Length: 219
Image 1 (cartoon, rainbow, N blue to C red):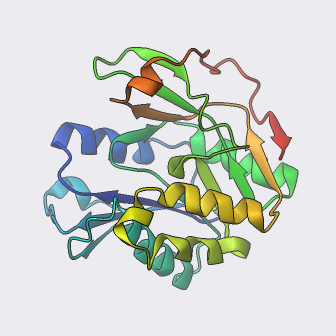
Image 2 (tube, one colour; image 1 turned 180 degrees about the horizontal axis):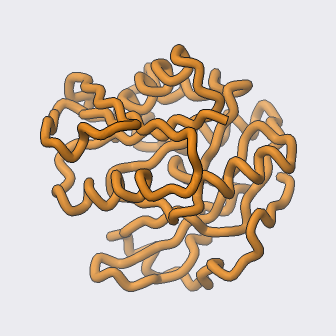
């Protein structure tokens, strides 16, 4: 399965962006191509010119990365990728993320797979597993693998007002739920996110790194 990973970026620091990009390079799954999309602030340094990576650029859209995601998803679809995953520039993957998500997709026979995410504070302390992005009421943008059978949902990143863009991730998830698309969920938190939100810092959870590989449930 050929997987496209899509990352919009704006003005993240080199350290933050490198953490994101390197987490894709270090995936233990072959067949990944990384689409890195400049949202009006194009960084032409060597760090985003690597084998297995395409650098795209759009004018500044100021819509929280939604238009860059939608544009790159259209390119990935046109180039024949089998599945698409998203990774914001301030997030990073565990090394087995794509392999596990593809494994769940293949074992479950479902075209959309979600997973939990780990929350870290700005000092690098692990806060726990995010209880908000539970795959039932909400699923964060970075916690999907979507088979090309349902690439049509990715057009929802486009053609929105700025107010709608603030909740673009919820629009996508609610549309998937509204159409009653059956999903599977990996039980292993393989997405990492540094949060500044007090609501996240108040959560309590347990890191699921010890979960059995490829454990999943139907949604």
